[in-house]
Image (cartoon, rainbow, N blue to C red):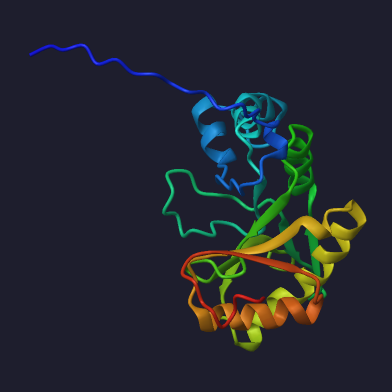
Length: 220
């Protein structure tokens, strides 16, 4: 039977601060590559950034704190609809040395910062799900990859030069203090191997993880 239910609403005298001042750590991952596909634009073109702007502005308005960046190609082993490309171009020179191009990374980070998202840069990932690490081989004249497991000599040789160069670049940009090398759902032993390399390069490098809680590495 329909009935009348009288009620009162008491509105407390609180004022919500501006989103940039909200305390909670909102970390919704962004996928620039989904937007370029949906809008049919070239990755990292002016049209791409224009298409992304309203979405990223909405994120900023709800208190987003973190910029999602990729420092390798396909860190999630193609489990997403749109494969994440790398924002850092890795090149193995003919003499065996390495060169790293941060052009896309810099543009993306600055774009997000200009919209008000500037608390943290999470860089995925030193431990991709398939352990494949792509790069351009100058001597062979083509893109290729290696498979390297944390704890092996190949893995250390691949990551130590990059992290050393990356730390230098981040410090020059003034971003080192807010940048975290980020991993997703990785086993504790692999995390310990990666942490050893990161801290050997710079003990002040921050590390972030989305995944199971491991008390053994929580302090790191």
